Length: 452
Picture (spheres, helix red, strand yellow):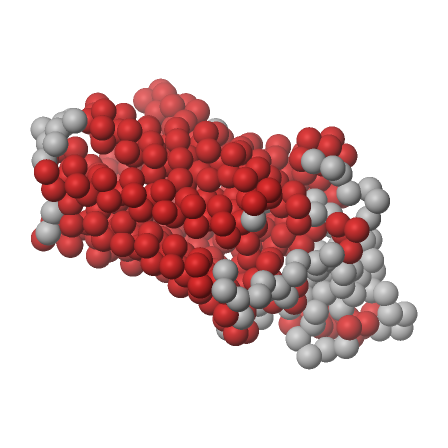
């Protein structure tokens, strides 16, 4: 979960309606329309704000178009590494212990490098940091490809290279969140985030479906080589972005005398940021364990559906997230972005909590709903972060939120494993639903979040 650290809608204190009069769409923090005598038209317009519509206007911006192409290609390639690494370990006579160490090395590297990525992006620029991270991951993945092709059964070497790939991912993530406001005008930022989310989830849905058969047909080395090539494509798009003129981020909020000098000062002075980080930790403390530990157990022992059922359940959440991106693109004129985001989070929590009690078909439908609600929440909150955070601190703010989400993942998985053994998968899902509804319900009690 992410949220913004300011109070304006687009950095200029207004929203941009679709073809309507600006006076009908502006709101004060308390939720009242500014134009006296227009309460009824504003209320009628509010009914139209929830029409799903998918605008392609952000793609007119050359830099953003290149960014979407590069990130979709890279996300597609990531699926091949996810499939290839386990097969590589097993082909070299390794077992679950060796595989867990390789995966843990990647995760540890990503987590450790995330704060560094935020600091570097704020200091040197998001595009340069993303480019450096892509080139580093290209070299590390190419080295993994060479190890696989040569059949070198050195798991310390493989783990070390996975660590380097994870470090690159950690440096890349905060910069990727921070670059979009420099490529789009404020009026297109929300639609751009929704579009980027949809394309990324689409690539994430298509990638695993193709990676499995291709890796089985070829070999892990070929799959890792393909993944390295996708990093090269991403790096090339970032180079091309650098040849254009970026759109300047909104300025007024950064011109105020009260803008904090650094991230620590911002954290002290912003109750909103503190609330967002708190909700992020609570929400992610159980979700990771539910999806990585309880869901496989539920699919295998609860529904008796095995690997096919597990794949269907995972695909349902990803497919729902893709559809959620399409729906979120239509929520451009909301009077209260924060309230809508938190209500969507409550829907996600309720859906996840009910998953084990509705059978396989019901679980698929609920995970579709949960995935869609998750994307709506993320798009609304990320847009708020980008619009409301001082540009010089945006990457560090996103790094802090990302770190909170990733940092609790190991704890979530360990706790879920113990809870599944003690109480069963159903109890874990029910607890996860309660934690999510509690976290987002708490957020709704916070005025700073409601007025996001």
